[in-house]
Image (cartoon, rainbow, N blue to C red):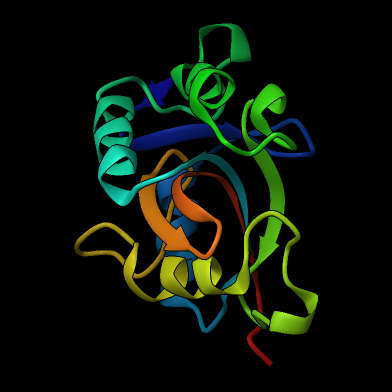
Length: 157
């Protein structure tokens, strides 16, 4: 659900926090994003990925929705070329963006996709993705419609 001033999120400890407030505070600190919890829909072309992303952005993007009414999960199941994630709502899990070591890349989300995601894909006016953002990035596997489900902050050193 959308709260006044930003997305409300339940933390692992069960309390409700305003995601926009947390991210604003983190942006002001020296901490940076260590990892994103991502979901994706893998498609053959960037043009198709842009069309799917545009359609998904028109829906309520809250990461707290159940998969039964989650248009992103439905798109992953119906459209994704990734057999490993299509029946799991497209969930990739946590993807490390701080080190982005090609030798330790995520098996389903290559280092070139991580680099493109980190370098160019935050929405205008922001340095990083926020839960609920849907972006498109291209890798050697194809075009990914990516949804940010969560953010993990940590020191960059």
